[in-house]
Length: 347
Image (cartoon, rainbow, N blue to C red; front, side):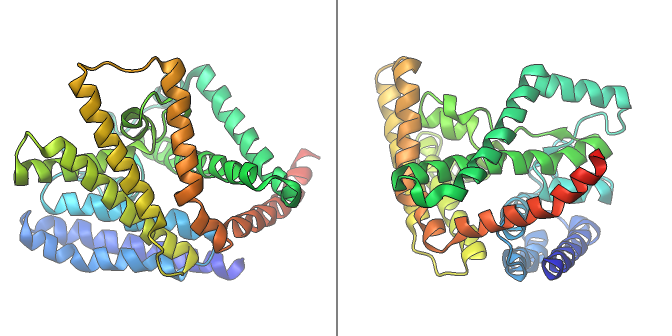
């Protein structure tokens, strides 16, 4: 673990150094092809940098932040688009770096008082939000504890628990990553998840509730590109299909980082399938004048479809390569490390 932490520090030192190059060199070049070419080495570097880590949690988070978020934001930045350019480019390196690789956006007030920060947190979550967040933490702990008896759990139920694990950990990790940016720099948190288990359709699930910053970046890049290539009429449907395909490929890269196994393309097919079904849903809804099933029916159908296809195509590669067991072991190490300190602090 000590060696892994040293590697983690080295990786992020190199990443920050690379972002300094982007800020001091690439940002000074004219937007367009020249700036894009100056960033090509960074795209490649950020795609291989997570391979220096072996921990599931540290490697997975680093892959998401560098190979996905940072690369996509820098790609938009090449053409003077996206959060690093609009509505106004960050003028400080201390702002550029977190915006480039964290799920955040800048508020107008970049030097808030403690009272302002308290109001931001309260308005963002509210009492109910804090309670819900605490409940999700408790549920994640219960999920980890259930793994102690996983040999006696029905395999299908265990797969469902794994799906819940993926959602809960993804939401909590992304939320925790963004909190320091708000506290230290006064950045507004970009909401990552909007209670996806309440989705009334696939459009609602992927467009309004699941991993919103990634879907927003894909929507911004792919839709605008497709509209320029094929026109406004066919752009929405084509953009949806391409966005899901790109998302699948990026997940394959993330899976490769954490498994070090050649892609099996299951996760790509998961996103392609959801892209096709979402397009069908859009066409049917448009043809029937916006008519939809009642949420009492559509919500369980949507959640069930996501869950079943997730068990079928999204989770098997992680389970087959022992990543779930690896995550459980890392959780146990963390508990063993923190428990004595918590006890000592309480005494």
